[in-house]
Amino acid sequence: MKNFLDDFPPFDILLKEMNGITLPGYREANGHIHTPYSFSAFSDMDTVFKMAVEEKIAVLGINDFYVTDGYDSFHKGCLANNIFPLFNIEFIGLLKDEQKNGIRINDPNNPGRIYFSGKGLDYPFHTGFMLRKQLKGVIRESQLQIKAMILKLNKLIEPLNPTLTLSYEDIKKKYAHDLVRERHIAKALRIVAAENFSSPGEQLLFLEKLYGGKKSKAEPSNSAALENEIRSNLLKSGGAAFVEEDENSFLELKKIIRIIIKAGGIPCYPVLLDDPSGKCTEFETDAENLYNSLKRMGIECIELIPGRNDLAILKNFVEFFHNKGFLITFGTEHNTPEMIPLTVSARGSVPLDESLKKIAWEGACVIAAHQYLRAEGRQGYVLPDGSHSAKQKRELIKLGQLVIEYFLNKR
Image 1 (cartoon, rainbow, N blue to C red):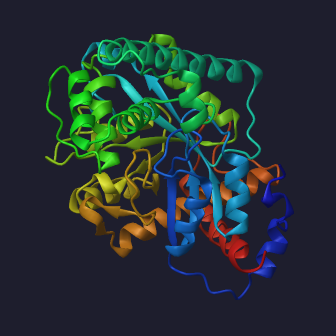
Image 2 (image 1 turned 60 degrees about the vertical axis):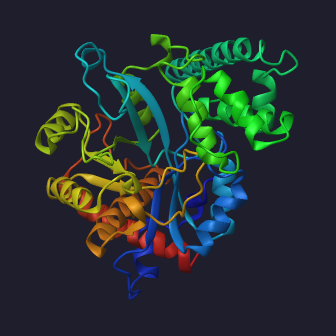
Protein backbone atom coordinates (compact mmCIF):
# COMPACT_ATOMS: atom_id res chain seq x y z
CA MET A 1 0.00 0.00 0.00
CA LYS A 2 1.20 3.50 -0.81
CA ASN A 3 2.26 5.75 2.07
CA PHE A 4 -0.03 8.79 2.39
CA LEU A 5 3.06 10.96 2.95
CA ASP A 6 4.21 10.24 -0.60
CA ASP A 7 1.58 12.75 -1.77
CA PHE A 8 2.62 15.47 0.67
CA PRO A 9 4.21 18.61 -0.83
CA PRO A 10 7.99 19.09 -0.60
CA PHE A 11 9.29 21.02 2.40
CA ASP A 12 9.45 24.47 0.73
CA ILE A 13 5.91 24.21 -0.63
CA LEU A 14 4.65 22.86 2.70
CA LEU A 15 6.05 25.97 4.42
CA LYS A 16 4.29 28.27 1.95
CA GLU A 17 0.97 26.45 2.23
CA MET A 18 1.08 26.53 6.03
CA ASN A 19 2.24 30.15 6.24
CA GLY A 20 0.00 32.09 8.58
CA ILE A 21 -1.65 28.99 10.04
CA THR A 22 -1.98 29.18 13.83
CA LEU A 23 -0.54 26.05 15.42
CA PRO A 24 -2.13 24.73 18.63
CA GLY A 25 0.02 24.35 21.73
CA TYR A 26 -0.73 20.64 21.66
CA ARG A 27 -3.29 18.09 20.56
CA GLU A 28 -4.25 14.75 22.05
CA ALA A 29 -1.74 12.11 20.99
CA ASN A 30 -1.35 8.44 21.84
CA GLY A 31 1.89 6.97 20.55
CA HIS A 32 1.52 3.37 21.74
CA ILE A 33 -1.43 1.03 21.25
CA HIS A 34 -1.48 -2.66 20.49
CA THR A 35 -4.01 -3.99 17.99
CA PRO A 36 -5.61 -7.41 17.37
CA TYR A 37 -2.55 -8.22 15.24
CA SER A 38 -0.66 -8.99 18.47
CA PHE A 39 -3.01 -8.84 21.47
CA SER A 40 -5.31 -5.98 22.31
CA ALA A 41 -8.32 -4.86 24.29
CA PHE A 42 -9.76 -3.97 20.88
CA SER A 43 -11.67 -6.79 19.23
CA ASP A 44 -11.29 -5.12 15.83
CA MET A 45 -9.65 -2.11 14.20
CA ASP A 46 -12.96 -0.26 13.73
CA THR A 47 -13.30 0.06 17.50
CA VAL A 48 -9.89 1.75 17.66
CA PHE A 49 -10.91 4.51 15.27
CA LYS A 50 -14.40 4.94 16.67
CA MET A 51 -12.94 5.63 20.11
CA ALA A 52 -10.17 7.84 18.71
CA VAL A 53 -12.68 10.05 16.88
CA GLU A 54 -14.92 10.30 19.94
CA GLU A 55 -11.94 11.31 22.12
CA LYS A 56 -10.52 13.71 19.52
CA ILE A 57 -7.19 11.88 19.23
CA ALA A 58 -5.18 13.67 16.54
CA VAL A 59 -2.15 11.35 16.43
CA LEU A 60 -2.17 7.62 17.05
CA GLY A 61 0.66 5.07 17.01
CA ILE A 62 0.36 1.35 16.32
CA ASN A 63 2.88 -0.60 18.43
CA ASP A 64 2.38 -4.36 18.04
CA PHE A 65 4.81 -7.02 19.24
CA TYR A 66 7.19 -8.27 16.54
CA VAL A 67 4.80 -7.75 13.64
CA THR A 68 3.80 -4.97 11.27
CA ASP A 69 0.89 -6.95 9.81
CA GLY A 70 -1.57 -4.34 11.08
CA TYR A 71 0.09 -1.43 9.28
CA ASP A 72 -2.13 -1.55 6.17
CA SER A 73 -5.38 -1.66 8.12
CA PHE A 74 -4.11 0.99 10.55
CA HIS A 75 -2.98 3.27 7.70
CA LYS A 76 -6.34 2.93 5.96
CA GLY A 77 -8.35 3.54 9.15
CA CYS A 78 -6.33 6.59 10.17
CA LEU A 79 -6.78 8.22 6.77
CA ALA A 80 -10.51 7.49 6.74
CA ASN A 81 -10.90 9.10 10.20
CA ASN A 82 -8.44 12.00 9.78
CA ILE A 83 -6.00 10.72 12.41
CA PHE A 84 -2.26 11.08 11.80
CA PRO A 85 -0.68 7.58 11.97
CA LEU A 86 2.64 6.70 13.61
CA PHE A 87 4.17 3.36 12.61
CA ASN A 88 5.86 1.64 15.52
CA ILE A 89 6.86 -1.86 16.66
CA GLU A 90 7.83 -3.57 19.93
CA PHE A 91 10.31 -6.33 20.73
CA ILE A 92 11.32 -8.37 23.77
CA GLY A 93 15.06 -8.76 24.26
CA LEU A 94 17.42 -10.11 26.86
CA LEU A 95 20.40 -8.50 28.62
CA LYS A 96 22.29 -11.54 29.89
CA ASP A 97 24.55 -9.77 32.39
CA GLU A 98 21.56 -8.13 34.05
CA GLN A 99 19.76 -11.47 34.06
CA LYS A 100 22.68 -13.16 35.84
CA ASN A 101 22.81 -10.35 38.40
CA GLY A 102 19.05 -10.37 39.06
CA ILE A 103 18.54 -6.86 37.72
CA ARG A 104 15.02 -6.16 36.48
CA ILE A 105 14.84 -3.70 33.61
CA ASN A 106 11.30 -2.90 32.42
CA ASP A 107 9.73 -6.27 33.13
CA PRO A 108 8.79 -6.35 36.84
CA ASN A 109 8.95 -10.15 37.06
CA ASN A 110 11.85 -11.27 34.87
CA PRO A 111 15.41 -10.01 35.47
CA GLY A 112 17.28 -9.19 32.28
CA ARG A 113 14.23 -9.11 30.06
CA ILE A 114 13.83 -5.84 28.18
CA TYR A 115 10.90 -4.52 26.21
CA PHE A 116 12.03 -2.22 23.43
CA SER A 117 10.20 -0.16 20.80
CA GLY A 118 10.94 1.32 17.41
CA LYS A 119 9.16 4.59 16.57
CA GLY A 120 8.30 6.10 13.20
CA LEU A 121 9.28 3.15 10.99
CA ASP A 122 9.07 3.44 7.22
CA TYR A 123 5.76 2.44 5.71
CA PRO A 124 5.56 0.00 4.00
CA PHE A 125 7.79 -1.89 6.45
CA HIS A 126 11.15 -3.15 5.22
CA THR A 127 14.43 -4.42 6.59
CA GLY A 128 17.40 -6.39 5.32
CA PHE A 129 17.15 -10.09 4.47
CA MET A 130 19.30 -11.31 7.38
CA LEU A 131 17.56 -9.14 9.96
CA ARG A 132 14.16 -10.20 8.65
CA LYS A 133 15.28 -13.83 8.90
CA GLN A 134 16.36 -13.31 12.52
CA LEU A 135 13.03 -11.66 13.33
CA LYS A 136 11.11 -14.54 11.78
CA GLY A 137 13.22 -16.95 13.83
CA VAL A 138 12.30 -15.18 17.07
CA ILE A 139 8.61 -15.25 16.13
CA ARG A 140 8.87 -18.96 15.33
CA GLU A 141 10.49 -19.68 18.72
CA SER A 142 7.80 -17.69 20.54
CA GLN A 143 5.07 -19.72 18.84
CA LEU A 144 6.80 -22.99 19.77
CA GLN A 145 6.70 -21.85 23.39
CA ILE A 146 2.99 -21.01 23.05
CA LYS A 147 2.25 -24.45 21.58
CA ALA A 148 4.11 -26.10 24.47
CA MET A 149 2.03 -24.11 26.98
CA ILE A 150 -1.20 -25.17 25.27
CA LEU A 151 -0.05 -28.80 25.46
CA LYS A 152 0.65 -28.51 29.20
CA LEU A 153 -2.70 -26.82 29.75
CA ASN A 154 -4.51 -29.64 27.93
CA LYS A 155 -2.79 -32.17 30.21
CA LEU A 156 -4.21 -30.27 33.20
CA ILE A 157 -7.69 -30.16 31.67
CA GLU A 158 -7.85 -33.83 30.61
CA PRO A 159 -8.35 -35.38 34.10
CA LEU A 160 -11.13 -32.88 34.79
CA ASN A 161 -12.96 -33.20 31.48
CA PRO A 162 -11.37 -35.25 28.67
CA THR A 163 -13.84 -33.81 26.13
CA LEU A 164 -12.39 -30.31 26.51
CA THR A 165 -9.25 -29.37 24.65
CA LEU A 166 -7.52 -26.28 23.32
CA SER A 167 -5.67 -26.12 20.02
CA TYR A 168 -3.15 -23.64 18.72
CA GLU A 169 -4.85 -23.53 15.32
CA ASP A 170 -8.28 -22.88 16.82
CA ILE A 171 -7.01 -20.11 19.12
CA LYS A 172 -5.18 -18.48 16.24
CA LYS A 173 -8.23 -18.64 13.99
CA LYS A 174 -10.72 -17.32 16.55
CA TYR A 175 -8.77 -14.82 18.62
CA ALA A 176 -5.49 -13.91 16.93
CA HIS A 177 -3.97 -13.13 13.56
CA ASP A 178 -0.50 -14.51 12.82
CA LEU A 179 0.81 -14.26 16.38
CA VAL A 180 -0.66 -16.16 19.34
CA ARG A 181 0.30 -14.85 22.78
CA GLU A 182 -0.31 -15.88 26.39
CA ARG A 183 -3.31 -13.57 26.63
CA HIS A 184 -4.97 -15.35 23.69
CA ILE A 185 -4.63 -18.65 25.58
CA ALA A 186 -6.16 -17.08 28.70
CA LYS A 187 -9.06 -15.73 26.66
CA ALA A 188 -9.64 -19.10 25.01
CA LEU A 189 -9.66 -20.91 28.37
CA ARG A 190 -12.10 -18.41 29.87
CA ILE A 191 -14.47 -18.92 26.92
CA VAL A 192 -14.14 -22.72 27.13
CA ALA A 193 -15.17 -22.53 30.79
CA ALA A 194 -18.10 -20.23 29.99
CA GLU A 195 -19.32 -22.39 27.12
CA ASN A 196 -19.10 -25.73 28.94
CA PHE A 197 -20.24 -24.90 32.48
CA SER A 198 -23.65 -23.35 32.90
CA SER A 199 -23.24 -21.49 36.19
CA PRO A 200 -20.55 -19.01 37.30
CA GLY A 201 -19.84 -21.24 40.29
CA GLU A 202 -19.13 -24.26 38.08
CA GLN A 203 -16.89 -22.17 35.84
CA LEU A 204 -14.84 -20.99 38.82
CA LEU A 205 -14.65 -24.50 40.28
CA PHE A 206 -13.23 -25.78 37.00
CA LEU A 207 -10.62 -23.01 36.91
CA GLU A 208 -9.74 -23.38 40.58
CA LYS A 209 -8.97 -27.05 40.00
CA LEU A 210 -6.61 -25.99 37.21
CA TYR A 211 -5.08 -23.51 39.66
CA GLY A 212 -4.26 -26.44 41.94
CA GLY A 213 -7.00 -25.55 44.43
CA LYS A 214 -6.21 -21.85 44.68
CA LYS A 215 -9.39 -19.82 45.10
CA SER A 216 -10.37 -17.41 42.35
CA LYS A 217 -10.74 -13.74 43.21
CA ALA A 218 -12.31 -12.79 39.87
CA GLU A 219 -15.94 -13.05 38.85
CA PRO A 220 -16.85 -14.70 35.52
CA SER A 221 -18.86 -11.58 34.71
CA ASN A 222 -15.58 -9.60 34.69
CA SER A 223 -13.92 -11.23 31.70
CA ALA A 224 -10.84 -8.97 31.79
CA ALA A 225 -10.10 -9.71 35.45
CA LEU A 226 -10.67 -13.43 34.94
CA GLU A 227 -8.35 -13.59 31.94
CA ASN A 228 -5.67 -11.75 33.89
CA GLU A 229 -6.08 -14.23 36.75
CA ILE A 230 -5.86 -17.24 34.40
CA ARG A 231 -2.68 -15.84 32.87
CA SER A 232 -1.15 -15.09 36.27
CA ASN A 233 -2.02 -18.44 37.87
CA LEU A 234 -1.33 -20.77 34.94
CA LEU A 235 0.78 -19.17 32.25
CA LYS A 236 3.30 -16.96 34.04
CA SER A 237 6.44 -18.15 35.83
CA GLY A 238 5.46 -20.62 38.56
CA GLY A 239 2.17 -21.52 36.88
CA ALA A 240 1.36 -25.16 36.08
CA ALA A 241 1.23 -24.51 32.32
CA PHE A 242 4.21 -22.16 32.17
CA VAL A 243 6.98 -22.97 29.71
CA GLU A 244 10.19 -20.98 29.99
CA GLU A 245 11.30 -19.26 26.81
CA ASP A 246 14.32 -20.57 25.00
CA GLU A 247 17.09 -17.97 24.68
CA ASN A 248 16.44 -18.12 20.94
CA SER A 249 13.10 -16.45 21.70
CA PHE A 250 14.98 -13.23 22.40
CA LEU A 251 17.08 -10.98 20.24
CA GLU A 252 20.12 -9.18 21.57
CA LEU A 253 19.40 -5.50 22.15
CA LYS A 254 22.01 -4.49 19.56
CA LYS A 255 20.21 -6.58 16.94
CA ILE A 256 16.86 -5.08 17.92
CA ILE A 257 18.25 -1.58 17.52
CA ARG A 258 19.80 -2.57 14.18
CA ILE A 259 16.44 -3.84 12.91
CA ILE A 260 14.71 -0.62 13.99
CA ILE A 261 17.26 1.67 12.35
CA LYS A 262 17.35 -0.47 9.21
CA ALA A 263 13.55 -0.19 9.03
CA GLY A 264 13.82 3.60 9.24
CA GLY A 265 12.75 3.91 12.88
CA ILE A 266 13.86 5.57 16.10
CA PRO A 267 15.13 3.25 18.90
CA CYS A 268 13.01 3.89 22.01
CA TYR A 269 13.18 2.53 25.55
CA PRO A 270 9.75 1.91 27.18
CA VAL A 271 9.92 3.04 30.81
CA LEU A 272 8.00 1.03 33.41
CA LEU A 273 8.60 3.53 36.27
CA ASP A 274 6.73 3.19 39.60
CA ASP A 275 4.39 0.38 40.60
CA PRO A 276 1.37 0.99 42.89
CA SER A 277 3.65 0.82 45.94
CA GLY A 278 5.92 3.51 44.47
CA LYS A 279 8.81 1.17 43.68
CA CYS A 280 10.79 0.93 40.44
CA THR A 281 12.94 -1.83 38.98
CA GLU A 282 16.65 -1.90 39.75
CA PHE A 283 17.45 -0.56 36.27
CA GLU A 284 15.06 2.41 36.63
CA THR A 285 15.36 3.29 40.33
CA ASP A 286 17.78 6.17 39.80
CA ALA A 287 16.95 8.55 36.93
CA GLU A 288 20.55 9.75 36.55
CA ASN A 289 21.88 6.19 36.30
CA LEU A 290 19.13 5.28 33.85
CA TYR A 291 19.99 8.31 31.73
CA ASN A 292 23.67 7.35 31.66
CA SER A 293 22.85 3.71 30.84
CA LEU A 294 20.60 4.68 27.94
CA LYS A 295 23.15 7.18 26.60
CA ARG A 296 25.83 4.49 26.62
CA MET A 297 23.50 2.32 24.55
CA GLY A 298 22.94 5.16 22.09
CA ILE A 299 19.29 5.55 23.12
CA GLU A 300 17.84 9.05 23.46
CA CYS A 301 14.13 8.34 23.14
CA ILE A 302 11.82 7.02 25.86
CA GLU A 303 8.12 6.30 26.07
CA LEU A 304 5.84 5.89 29.05
CA ILE A 305 2.41 4.42 29.71
CA PRO A 306 1.31 7.03 32.28
CA GLY A 307 -1.75 5.03 33.33
CA ARG A 308 0.69 2.83 35.28
CA ASN A 309 2.27 5.74 37.14
CA ASP A 310 1.66 8.21 39.94
CA LEU A 311 1.28 11.70 38.45
CA ALA A 312 3.88 13.38 40.69
CA ILE A 313 6.49 10.66 40.09
CA LEU A 314 5.73 10.73 36.36
CA LYS A 315 6.07 14.50 36.16
CA ASN A 316 9.43 14.61 37.94
CA PHE A 317 10.79 11.78 35.79
CA VAL A 318 9.57 13.22 32.48
CA GLU A 319 10.87 16.70 33.26
CA PHE A 320 14.29 15.26 34.12
CA PHE A 321 14.60 13.49 30.75
CA HIS A 322 13.03 16.39 28.88
CA ASN A 323 15.70 18.71 30.29
CA LYS A 324 18.31 16.18 29.10
CA GLY A 325 17.04 16.57 25.54
CA PHE A 326 15.37 13.17 25.26
CA LEU A 327 12.51 12.51 22.88
CA ILE A 328 9.50 11.46 24.99
CA THR A 329 6.18 9.93 23.98
CA PHE A 330 3.15 8.62 25.86
CA GLY A 331 0.65 5.87 25.16
CA THR A 332 -2.03 3.68 26.71
CA GLU A 333 -0.77 0.32 25.42
CA HIS A 334 -4.17 -1.46 25.45
CA ASN A 335 -2.25 -4.74 25.72
CA THR A 336 -4.57 -6.23 28.35
CA PRO A 337 -8.24 -7.26 28.18
CA GLU A 338 -9.38 -4.07 29.96
CA MET A 339 -10.94 -1.45 27.71
CA ILE A 340 -9.74 1.97 28.85
CA PRO A 341 -9.90 5.36 27.09
CA LEU A 342 -7.36 6.25 24.40
CA THR A 343 -6.80 9.62 26.04
CA VAL A 344 -3.62 9.34 28.09
CA SER A 345 -3.92 9.86 31.84
CA ALA A 346 -1.94 8.95 34.95
CA ARG A 347 -2.74 6.16 37.40
CA GLY A 348 -6.30 6.32 38.67
CA SER A 349 -7.42 8.18 35.52
CA VAL A 350 -5.80 11.37 36.83
CA PRO A 351 -5.55 13.87 33.92
CA LEU A 352 -2.11 14.99 32.75
CA ASP A 353 -1.26 18.65 33.15
CA GLU A 354 -0.52 20.92 30.18
CA SER A 355 3.24 20.68 30.68
CA LEU A 356 3.22 16.91 30.28
CA LYS A 357 0.82 17.07 27.34
CA LYS A 358 3.11 19.55 25.56
CA ILE A 359 6.19 17.38 26.12
CA ALA A 360 4.38 14.32 24.74
CA TRP A 361 3.05 16.40 21.83
CA GLU A 362 6.58 17.48 20.95
CA GLY A 363 7.59 13.81 20.85
CA ALA A 364 4.70 12.95 18.54
CA CYS A 365 5.62 15.89 16.29
CA VAL A 366 9.23 14.75 15.98
CA ILE A 367 8.13 11.25 14.97
CA ALA A 368 5.67 12.71 12.44
CA ALA A 369 8.44 14.89 10.98
CA HIS A 370 10.77 11.91 10.89
CA GLN A 371 8.22 9.89 8.91
CA TYR A 372 7.68 12.81 6.52
CA LEU A 373 11.40 13.22 5.84
CA ARG A 374 11.90 9.48 5.39
CA ALA A 375 9.05 9.41 2.88
CA GLU A 376 10.90 12.15 0.97
CA GLY A 377 13.99 9.96 0.88
CA ARG A 378 15.80 12.01 3.53
CA GLN A 379 17.46 10.83 6.72
CA GLY A 380 14.98 12.02 9.35
CA TYR A 381 15.66 12.19 13.09
CA VAL A 382 18.09 9.27 13.33
CA LEU A 383 21.42 9.03 11.54
CA PRO A 384 22.69 5.62 10.35
CA ASP A 385 24.61 5.20 13.62
CA GLY A 386 21.50 6.02 15.68
CA SER A 387 22.68 9.48 16.75
CA HIS A 388 20.96 12.85 16.44
CA SER A 389 21.41 16.45 17.63
CA ALA A 390 19.42 18.63 20.02
CA LYS A 391 19.23 21.34 17.36
CA GLN A 392 17.71 18.85 14.94
CA LYS A 393 15.06 17.95 17.54
CA ARG A 394 13.92 21.58 17.89
CA GLU A 395 13.63 21.94 14.11
CA LEU A 396 11.72 18.69 13.79
CA ILE A 397 9.18 19.69 16.44
CA LYS A 398 8.22 22.68 14.26
CA LEU A 399 8.23 20.61 11.08
CA GLY A 400 6.13 17.89 12.70
CA GLN A 401 3.53 20.44 13.80
CA LEU A 402 3.25 21.68 10.21
CA VAL A 403 3.02 18.15 8.82
CA ILE A 404 0.29 17.14 11.26
CA GLU A 405 -1.71 20.35 10.77
CA TYR A 406 -1.44 20.01 6.99
CA PHE A 407 -2.75 16.46 7.30
CA LEU A 408 -5.64 17.43 9.58
CA ASN A 409 -6.74 20.56 7.71
CA LYS A 410 -5.48 20.77 4.14
CA ARG A 411 -4.86 17.25 2.86
